[in-house]
Length: 313
Image (cartoon, rainbow, N blue to C red):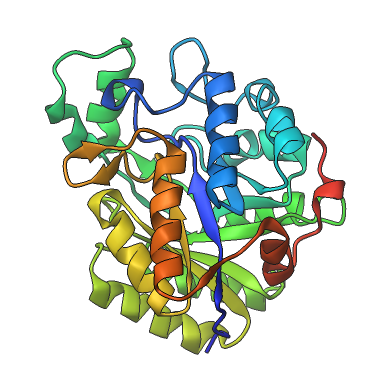
């Protein structure tokens, strides 16, 4: 069983690749807004900032390294938070394209999805009649055709490219279902990843495991059996499950992830005004439960990261 800690790492996922500008005015897509919200989230208590890029002209998902470099240096100069760059980012492109931003920036952490899956958010298309940008409606409505490809060869490519001696990136292993835990165990047995691994239990994405407490408990029990003391863990509850599952994770000795990538809301029917508002809310919950919010340096120690002096931005 993984070691319990009184220090809780808050990860904040700033913008993601699901929600579109129409869905919330708070969702950042311009470079300066991504940077500003990331910095504010770090000041509110996020030790790790999980980052995607957007086209600053229309808010569409972008894998262009130049778009990342418009905000990464500003964030790094303004906060000591751990930068975690997504290697997901797109449901249409190859793994080689998905890792280009991370290969240029060489961050301390990257996300890594641990299996292929249906990945859909098409029901959101029914909620909106008028869209800010022409691309949004089809992008959302057609997500019922998307398969999020993360083959064993894809995973090995990311591990070898970014986990190499050149980059020494550690991964946020995103596990959307129980089988993804077994995939990770296999990859560790093959020597692709060294402990301690950091597992993000993701509950509530259509195509993955549901956001039920029983599912979280089962994922945790399975991880304990597969990884023993060789892992650290966190919970991402999508949508309305964000705060309830984060609270459960804290009481179970885990860490938490919030942010507008995962939920646009701060309460039932109430849109969040910013990423920092969500971080502040979960911080209050953590502290009221008697735990301590981890600093970025705490996170570096707990997750065995290479250090911010080794990044390239």
